[in-house]
Length: 402
Image 1 (tube, rainbow, N blue to C red):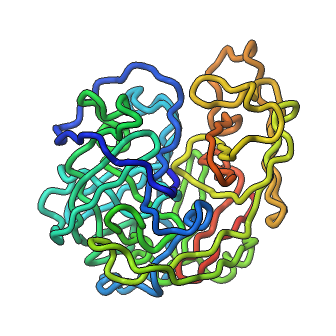
Image 2: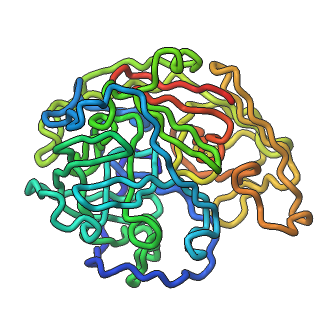
């Protein structure tokens, strides 16, 4: 669910939300990640993988509990493919966030920024600011709603006066008229399974259409740092990790630059953004994909590995299966991050050997999307092999192989 530039046209009628239907949808190919379509303010695609807004927390972003600087762990919930009454087609990571007096089950997404939740799940527990917001995703889904402020609680951490987006309507962009919201459909991210999305990626503010919303982790942590630890039994967010814990991570420092002020209706402060991440990865598939190296983003909102490039090295394009999936069956896949001294290698089963459903975590599929600038997306399966550090204030990210 990576935020992305440049934007695609956002036309496409949105429909008012009705109470979500929990009927099991018909089977469909594995869904591609929801990659956010932000505005054209950024310089490059890769630079905006790690965007941020000007220094420090926003007014009112301090925690009400007064204990935000202490290390703490927040339990998460792993939802496997086929769970949620069969409504989930891919593995997902869920956090329960208290918004005012109400609890919301949100998809954890390190590839986007901002808490976006169905207005019906929050009710009067958030105060609209008067601003509106909308976002589009490359799946074709378009959401629209109102910016609001609310008190958030995640585990033991509490933050007052945080900006969130109350989603009032869902629709499809013109390029994808049959998206999950078409014909009154209910996307899993908004009503089908989850109440919304908890975007906690490397940005201090979502640089989307209207600039909503602030990264909730800026207010829920004392120093802007947290670790995503994922395993099937005990996934966690580890807030404010102590220096001894951080020391085991191989980190990449990012430079901060000031860009242009946002257009009217967006965030009221000058934008700042992180320069492209120096951390790179290389991806190979025997006989299909040659040594393809590019900046890497670790994204819990992506259920597979993914490569985006103008043209992949090797004959991969000739092997594409429906849904943009590279035919890796029976082949060895290797993902390497040299700066972290980490390599993950696995062999996909052959198609003939698939008597049981594919293990989406240990042998994930590899999807391909054509983009002008290459990037490798290490989705949720990669988090089973490494812990990932996010330092919003210090401007760095890091890996600790397990």
